[in-house]
Image 1 (tube, rainbow, N blue to C red):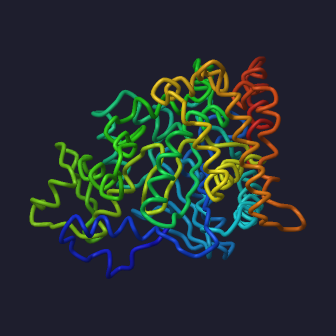
Image 2: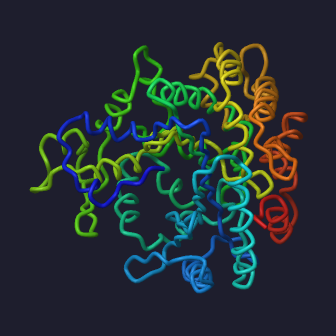
Amino acid sequence: MPVLSAIEAIRPIESKADLIAHLALGAHTAPSRGVGAEMEKLMIDIETGEAADFDRIEQLLLQLETSGSWEGVRENGRLIGLLGDKSSITLEPGGQMELSGALCPDIHCSNIDYVDYVAQITPAAKQLGLAFLGLGTQPFSKLDQIAWLPKNRYGIMSRYMLKTGERGQQMMKQTAGLQVNFDFRDEADCIALLRLSMQLSPLLYALFANSPLLGGEPTGFLSTRGEIWRQTDPDRTGLIPALFKDGAGFETYVDYALNIPMYFLVRNGKYIDLTGSRFTFAQFLSEGHNGETAILGDWDLHLSTLFPEVRLRPQVEVRTADALPSSMSLSVAALLKGLFYDDVARKETEKLLRTQDLQTVYPLSWRLGLKTPCGSATLLEPARELLKIARDSLKRQGRTRNNCDETIYLEGLDEIVETGVTLAERLLSRWHGSHREKIEALLSHSEIG
């Protein structure tokens, strides 16, 4: 993602044109197109299965920092993240660990970074009695059992979440997802990708459903994370219908973002809480706040607090999938790269999804997975077609390493589309026996290493 320089961040915003220009920074005209993966993992105590406490998470970060490969990031005297040469490690509100990889020319590049990351963190975590889960929800720990990460922005967000939906704090502390970032050629290409990403969202929930548990029990949803997001904050989650209208462009997304209430400003390294009322960025732009006027860094920060299925910041960020087991962590990136970065594949995908009733299928997908009714069939049938389209596309794209193309990252999906059985259903089939047996099922299903 393009990063604002310190000088650009403090540049005053003079008009809506400045906001539009910021989104246009994601345009990329070079022949090769980038892909970036951001993968969250849950951390649990390997003996109890409960969410890891922050003291031990901080010890893990400290070990990685002292290895010399990472530079620590601290807030209020606590170690809350790490910066590497190409990647960063950040912590989500409930202690979920996220690896944000560099924008890469292919999935092989992303995989090299990921394998190196796993090799570093897995043994260090085991020494501390911790394990990583590629799973979309904390399987055992209840909301009040998970401490908040000591980060100022999360304190503001957690209070605001109590006003906007029933499950916002659960989203923050009990869920983990996977995000894939793409660039675009121009405004028309950007809008096409945003639309296609939203049309794909039911299929992404269904194919990658991996969060059937909460509080130690099945929830009735294959992607409980999807249901939690639905009840988080209607202002800033879900789909963006305006982007489907004729003539939609960067300004459409700007208008959407302008009318969403702000969480905070940052001045001199301190957060200013703006959640006392529905104070939108449009109001801030026209009125200011207590003598502060809008700068470009404020806009960039505000964009980071919007959580739709696909976000423009200013790359296209697809945010639908649950966190996944290690062997499948790059399958979302491979699938979408196949569908997005090849003109033939994109046309085939658009044609396949043209008759889908998105408003009906979307809310059912996280409950029923690939069994979600879609026309006269289920989501399993288009999922099979999409996998074939993506595989053919990646072969045409021809990005190889060690005589393998990028289709190797789709292999974990073959069994899912052949059987129609999701990762969530596989886990549920093993969810029986003693507490220890359930922990073992979790570890073999979804542990990172």
